[in-house]
Length: 357
Image (cartoon, rainbow, N blue to C red; front, side):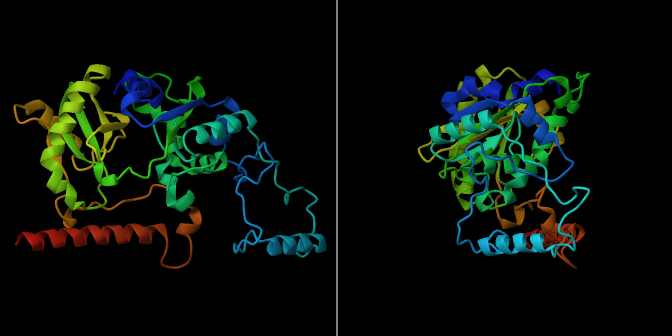
């Protein structure tokens, strides 16, 4: 993968060209101070203080949350005054005090205005990645955000975002300076309008090799959608025509992938572009298989893969979850989680073999 190929896949590069065929998006440059905050990995995890003076994570005065109820806070304050909290009322070395939270008033104001302009809810991403691995930290376990603080919480919690900031260019064969964040590289925050109508069964990943569409598959591989088997024959020519008429004439790379969504009325919307290979997931394919298809592709056109039955469902692995989820007593460690995934895979294999007999 060449650096130019990766750079074409930045949302700030492709969105202006394909905005008529995509989800409405507003893009903000990331100031250096906010970039340093995202990269800071020492000290406490502090959300930025709101420039408006509002609690970054508002809580109802009658909240049932035992950690943030008025009664608990009042008790904590009394204990600190008594010196009964932790055995000492004050630390002479200052170890018991937290630093002041950072504040980014200009970025916060611009982001809040964009959220309003996009209907009140957005999902965020940087140049390439969304913080999908940190969805468990978001409202309702999703990437839906209604405030600047919710966006920051997802960005700060995500390994995908850290990869964008620090390692995105390392896979480029012609890249000499591999550290994105240290090279003066421009990062930006893209806010995309949230749509409840985006149905995961109608999202697809398309694979392009030497400017030919060689593969299509469903994007969400952790579920079986019977409707896909029914609509497969209608969807393939629709996607192929969209590629030939819209994507191929405008996108500069020869090798890449792109994700799209088919609406209820049959129109197609581009969700994202990604480079061929590298850290892009091939989903229901593997890269060697796609390379072979590119070599011998004749008149049959691209192969379209969907999960045909429940035995074909792939397990979903979160790459980042809150530490408390991983260390909650005996039997709930990360090794236990991976063991359960392995057992699930073996069970699916046995079910598939039994069904074939």
